[in-house]
Amino acid sequence: LREFGEVLTDMERRGVRVDAHDYLAGVEVQAREDREYHVAAFRKWAASRIGPDGLAINPASSLQLCIFLFGGALNKKTNEPTEHQRTIQIPREEIPPEAILAFQERDQRENGGSETEQEETPDSFDMMTAEQLKTMCRGHGLKVSGKKSELKARLRGHFLAKNGGSEESTDDFGTMNVEDLRDACIVRGLSDRGNKNALLKRIREDSAYANELISANCPRDRDAYKRISEALAEAVRKDGSGEYAKIMAAVKDKETAES
Image (cartoon, rainbow, N blue to C red):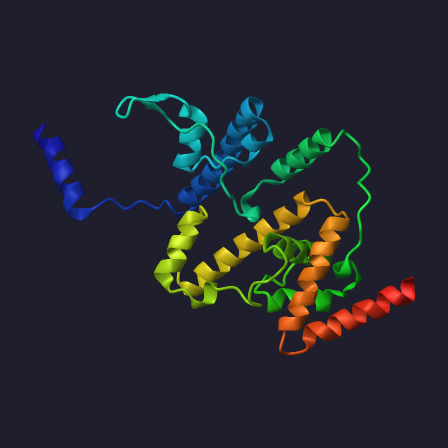
C-alpha cells in the first residue's frame, strides 16, 4: 500500500499529462446528437399525451415540465391541487418546425377539414409594397425584417390588438430602464439576461410574434377591414412626417387603377 500511496502523491504533486483534445471534441458532438435525439423522443411522447402542444415543450423548462408531469397533483404543503394548465408564450424561433406543422393541421381540422382558405377581404396592406410596409412597421416600433406576408400580418395584428391604433406611433419599451425591461421579459416568459439592447430586441420580437398570432386568428372579414381602415386613418392623422399620407395616397391610386 505504501508504494501505491507514493504513486498517488507523486501524481498529485507532478500531475498527469492527458491529451484529450480530439477525444473531448468528439464527445461533445456525440452529446449534442444524443440530446437532440432524446428531446425529439420526449416531445413525440408528450404529443401522444396532450396533442401538438407536446411538440413545443421545452424539456429544459422546469415550469413546463412541472405542469406537464405533475399538474393537478395535490400539493402536500398547501393541500391544494397544483396548476394543471397554463398558456406559455414561446419565441417563434424556438418552436420546432414539426410543431408548427402540427398546429396548422389541427387548425385545419377544427375549421372543418377544408384545405381551401376562407374568402378574405383584402385591405390596404395588400396594396402596399414591401418598402411601404417596412415604413409602417418602423413607425410603430415593429420589426422590419421578414417576408412581405409577415410584415402585413405584423401590422394587422398591431392595429387589431390596439383596437383602432389609437396608441402612439412608437412603443414605450425604449423609455424603460433595464430593471423594468427585465421585469417585462419575466412576465412574458422570456430570458431576462443581457444588456438593454438585447432586452429590447427580445421584447419587440415577442410583441411582433404576438401580433402575427392575433392576425392569424382574426377573420379577414368586413369588420376587420373596417377596423384596420379606421386605424390607418387615425395613424395618418397623427403622423407628423407625412409619410403615412403618401403611402395611403399611393394605395388609393393603386386601388383605383385595379378597380
